[in-house]
Image 1 (cartoon, rainbow, N blue to C red):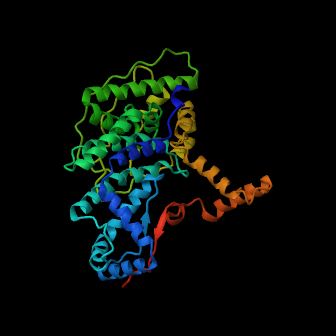
Image 2 (cartoon, helix red, strand yellow):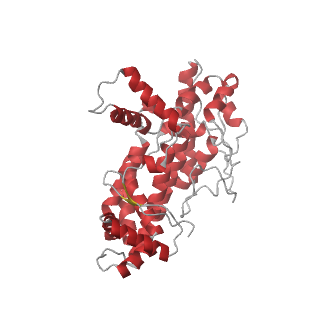
Image 3 (cartoon, one colour):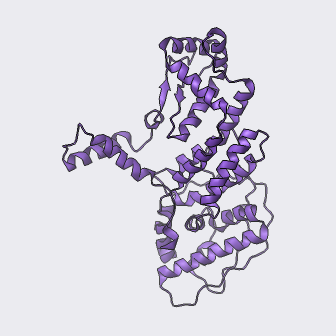
Length: 391
């Protein structure tokens, strides 16, 4: 049970980003006040619509006003404001009452902050998925955040450096040691096995320490497998390290994260066929699995179905993989269910029979097909105007 006590990954991301937003700059305040200024009057919205047309902006997305309890709303607010930044400049020329226009240098900083928040927003969406296993996504993406923060710490902008320093303090508090259970999940993904784990650890700790870390994870996974097999054989011998193969320049397409404007692929140098580790004198099911050919990372694979199909081949290892890979990274899905129930059973509708409440919740799922719709899921304020698309 010691491996299965874990923190909600999306809540941890939330704490990391909120800590960084403590160092927020006045330029974000100016964007917020600009959106509020437009929202306060229909005539201002119409004036801004004319500015959008004059600037030949062919977008029909609405401006969003952020809310204090949702950091991702700040990201969406900045993302939309950057689309219309030339229209804001035009508004400042024709409307003398508009006093919150960011300077050119501030627009550049807004762009940098938006790029800093973008990967966190994408990974939060990835971790919050409920239609696919997420345990095997943890290690790679937390490692990417680690590398991303190290890269951004070298920014020439002092505000960005301050934000990253605050984010790093929270990251080190909760994720200084990557959760062992999810390292197991990475090994049990047949597209990754030890290759991805080794690559990430070597990048973090160097060749010798990285190889030792991989060996420790593999050894502990062997011990956990023994709990499933109830074997009376002696404990497995800790794995020894084989010579490391220099990484190639092959670009991998296995990342599930869509690329933002800023490059966020730190696995470009990963050698898909990189070195193997010896597995001791005994050949456990884990050893057999690791020695089998690895599936390409770019393959879209249902990992739970893979282990179900190969149950006869891998025996108890399939049971272990099922239990590890079915662990959710986040409690968001269950919390969302309670939120839906709270909206159905309101103070005006408190006398529904239990079966009617269940019918309303399940019918909603059937109607929406478990798909999230951006305009529906986002909780914030919209500032709308007529579409200029196609003008």
